[in-house]
Figure: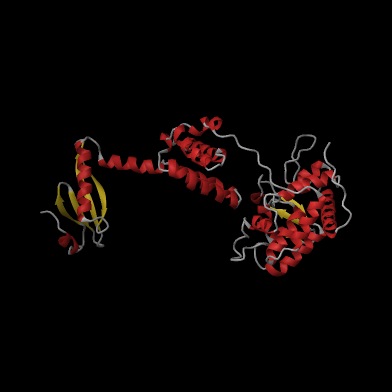
Length: 398
């Protein structure tokens, strides 16, 4: 006799599991704990087989009957419903989205948080809507190109997105989920990247005006200190924002940045001038009890926003003419052209790879005493500019 909703609702559990048949292979398995499972029993290639169709009441009587009908149609067409279901699960595991998630979990822990966040947002916004649900071994170059063209239509270069897709495909190849990387054929058809230069000020007179503007900025205590310190250390903005008190040694005047925070994944040492130490000691009175030197105003568990520097430069009237990263170009130029320091010391302090005469990369402690002198001279020079001292003329390259 076919089941009814009333009969199922009034069913009682027993000491042992028992079945309530609905007909045509569908039955409800009632367990001693009260659980009620829909099952479909069928014969395929001469063997009795069965699959689960879900639990009641999540799967209603009518929904279970619909699933039974679908399964019977598969059997009639020579397809094993159990094998079909396994293929479907495999398809989920093999989707580009699933493989990308696996790849991201394996590699993102080595990245700085900003890079990891930017990469994942790019995948979710630009790539997954196009190929996220496709099986990775069925994606053609044209599928990837369609996603990249949308990025280009917004006025952006798509090379970074293509590179990330390639990394996911190669992870899939290594995992045995696909045999090819369709992104490899797309590099020559993408719009050429325009070389970007961070806006920076390299004229000493203009720099003096900027430094005085920073001193006069009416912002929060933490942001003002960040802006005062950044020109003195000229690290990448993200490295400064993620500065932690445990990385600062006030006795030696050194800031030791661990490898995982650096772009090139190499530890880096920044000598701190007297002026830089004074700024940090003042800041320590306010944020020294927490982890970060420059925490978010909302919560000390995060750093200040990566948009903070851009907002302040806009407020000061330097939109498109100066940025936080630009202090690196400023320091590189003036330390060489005006203060006459050796280029290899400057490059080393910029955390660029510098090699010795034997082709070996210097370690982070190389030339530390010379770099200490350079960083102190640099701070003295900036404070002199700010105070209106006589400015050494900028020597333009011939």
